[in-house]
Amino acid sequence: MKKTVLVNGIIAGVIVSVLMFCSTMYYKKAGNFDYGMLFGYASMLLAFVFIFVGIKTYRDRYAAGVISFGKAFRIGILIALIGSSFYVATWMVEYHYFFPDFFEKYMDAMVTKARAAGTSEAEIAKELAQMKSMGEWYKNPVFHVLFTYLEILPVGILVTIISGLILKRKPQA
Image 1 (cartoon, rainbow, N blue to C red):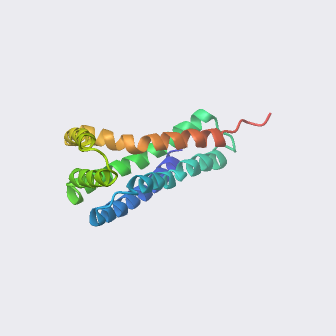
Image 2: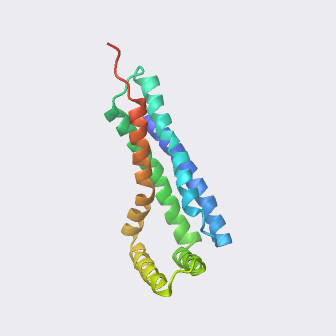
Image 3: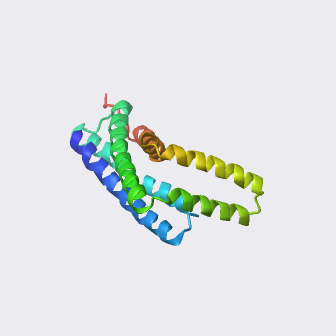
């Protein structure tokens, strides 16, 4: 189980990290965050295909075609944790060394977009205050890591549950 989890977790982590790095460099250069969330979650789903692959590989190669939901969930969640850890580590490096002004640029882009959409200045100020508050929390490394895990880990848990339900197989009577 360890080899299956490690191999698939590392592959998922490398995929999500490379795609995040490329998209971050693009957004930093272009200053346009319009499709950032869509691209980010799509890259997470692409990487987490390896949760399904890992569970299926374990079931078919090492468990004689049989796996319980619980065992599938354990394998999937470990792969998700490894992939998510790569994501968090990559973002920490990117944020601190390549994109330390991320919050400022993101806030500027959101204000520009809100003004173009006709949002009132009062609503913009309220949203800006919330973003600045989150930016302050983000300066604390513990919260920075937790917020980053909260971006990706729920996707991994969802993919794990779905994969476990699809791939579980009871022994033949």
